[in-house]
Amino acid sequence: MIELAATAFFMAWSVGANDSAKAVGTAVGSGIVGFKRAVLIITVFTTLGAVIGHSAVPGTITRLAGGLTTAQVALALFSAASAVTLASLLSMPISTTQSIVGALIGSSLALGLPVDWLTIGKIVSAWFFSPAFASFLAIVIYKLYKPLLKRIRGLKNLELTQKWLVFLASAYSAFNLGTNEVSNVIGLAKAGGMSNPNAIMALIMAFGTLTFSYKVMMTIGKDIAPLGPTSAFSSQFGASIAVNTANLFGLPVSSGQAVVGAISGLSAYKGEKVNKKVLTDIVKSWVEAPLFAGVLAFFLIKLFSAAGF
Image (cartoon, rainbow, N blue to C red; front, side):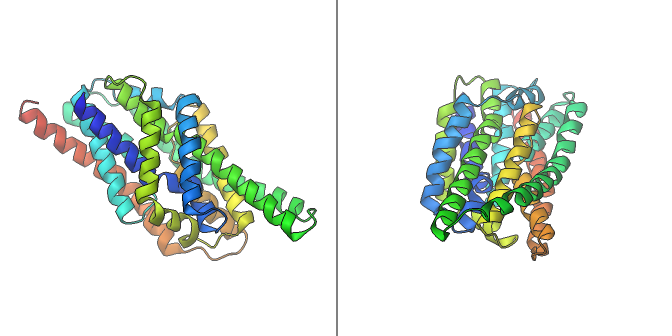
C-alpha cells in the first residue's frame, strides 16, 4: 500500500506540473491572471472538482486496470508519472490521461491480460474529437462574445468584464481538471485499495502547479499563438465545454488537447500566426508520452515479475 500511495502522489504532482497549465495557461499567458493567483485558482477549484464533481471517468480507468495487483497499479502510475514529468521538463503540454492509458495497456500486455480494445478505441477516438470540437466551440463563443463586448461602455468596465470572464473560464477548467484528470489518478488509487484520497490528491496536484508548471503555462499561453483577453476566454471556455461533454460519457480525454485545439483553431480563424513548430512538437509529444509510459510499464512489470514481486 505504501508503494501505491507514493506513486499515486507522484502522479498527482505530475498532473499539477503539466495539466494545470491547460486550465490557467491562457489566463497567465495573456497577462490577465498572475502566476500566484493561478495557483490559488487551481488549488480551490481543482479540489472542489475532485471532491464534489461527478464523472464516469474514474470507472472507465478502473475497468482498464482490472486484473492488476496493487503493486502493478503502482508501477503503472509510476510509468505514467515519469512520462508526464519528462514532458514537463521539456515544457510540453501533454496528456496525463493518455499516459495513464498507455501505462495500463503496457501493464496488461506484460501480464498477458486481456485488453478492452473496444473501450480503448472509444477513448482514442475522443482524443481526436475533443481538440476539433474545442476548436469549433472556441470560434462560436468568440463570434458570440465579441459583439457583446462592444456594448460595454467605458474602458474600465470593459477590462473588468474581460478579467472576470477569463477568471470564470479558468475556474471552470480547473474544476474540470479535478473531475477528469485528478479523478483518473483517484480511480487507480482506489482500484489499488486506497480509500477516499480525493482531497489529498488535489492538494498534491496544487503543489505540483506551484513548483513546476510555469514553463508549460507559457507554452500554452504564449508560444502557440498570441492571446488577448477575448481569445483567452473563448479558447479556455470552449475547451472546458468539450472536456465536460466527454466527462458525461465517461471518456477520459485530455484537457491539454482540447485547449491546444481551441487556441490553434481560433487563432487560425482570426488569421493570426500559429507557431507551427511548437504545435508540431506538442502533437508529437501526445504520441510519444503514452508510448513511453506503456513501454516503461511493460518492462517494469516484466522485471518485477521475474524478480518474484
